[in-house]
Image 1: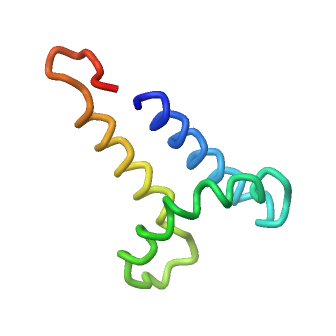
Image 2 (image 1 turned 90 degrees about the horizontal axis):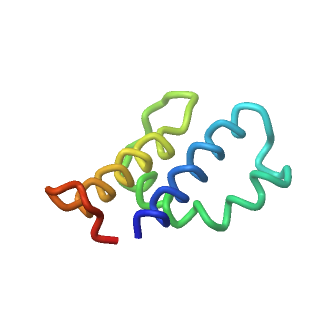
Image 3 (image 1 turned 90 degrees about the vertical axis):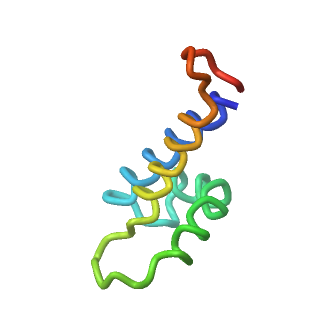
Length: 81
């Protein structure tokens, strides 16, 4: 489970980075869209329109994934997943 969450975190980070330089139609972003839309949509629905020119969904998705990752860790430092 930890590896899945880490992989999702890397995808979200990469997609956010690519979004600054590439349009959504280019291959790296087009490949991540079907994987990340199920992660981004609940976050976007929970956010009210901020009026900012940036999408905060990746940042909040990373925070949620980090929280889930920390909850899965045992107090002894060993992972559950």
